[in-house]
Image (cartoon, rainbow, N blue to C red; front, side, top):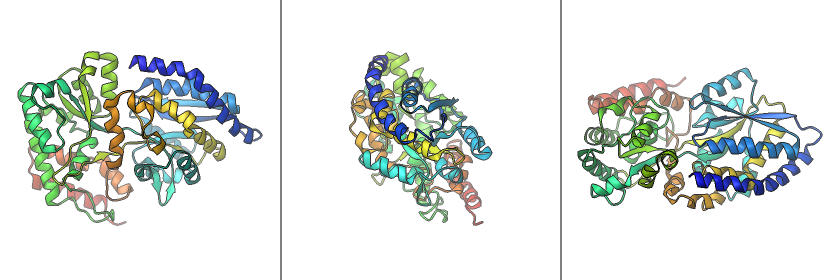
Length: 431
């Protein structure tokens, strides 16, 4: 991975000319009214080179081309929502921000309508994946510009699977259960988060529920549908999966736990972003050589699902110059800029624009290709209903996560479903 990053860095000088030419056109068009500076807020990336490339290459190039200084403000992992909330409520601070999950909906009234920008970017970029609209369209308006999806897929030890007689990663949940039983007996248990983290729990439990045909509500977003035979089957499977393939510690795990366990060789399989492979190749090369990645398994009906985990960029409505902010985002998403920024992260952020479906960075590390392919089966929590404040509350209160976790801890399927249904009825009640 270090060689990849160095190679990308050597290309930076060549890319600057392209960055400058596009920015120059924008700067010329707005030379008389351009603000002196704008601030873009981001959560620190798990790929350090990604942030460094923006700060050291993109921001200086834009300033040189337009005279507008771009301040790249980073906040620590897990702190972005608090910061975005403060900025939105006080109407002061950064002009633009990285947004994730369903924040385009949560902060709808505090964000600029960028539908026109999305249309022009989509036209230039070969069109948007369907998942892009699901992430940012609120009441028919694009409230953020999609950048990339941070997929949550299966990471596993190919060598240990092979030793257990499992040559290919299982295509179904039942197949993964069978493999997990063998791996645990061999001293290599699985480790899937069941605690109150913010990503790796949702990343496999919602897809598991959907793949069995379960859902929180009907597509109308109002009718509670969690109490079903499909949900019961998903819970019964999860309990067996937990008991026969994992150890009890996972009930209290948060997002860092499975990464540490995998890289310390305590577990043989988990659900995570591709950062596990990235870190393994950088810091634990022997583990990196034997780490595989695969899409989530299919359920009984033959369908597989993944969590939509979008990174998007929104413009706060309080920004003094909305057009300048739009110009900047247009520049960022131009292939001449977006391409190198994606490239530096080596596919960690799967683009939502079709023109990048077969981009060279996907072939730097072929093991990452499942993250690209998962876009077509990725959804936000609450699917098949549209995003809503009630759904956000369900996520915040860990309704689905706790339903599965409590079953794994010993409660009956009937009880955990009843508890979840009662919570959802309260959350989704009219008015």
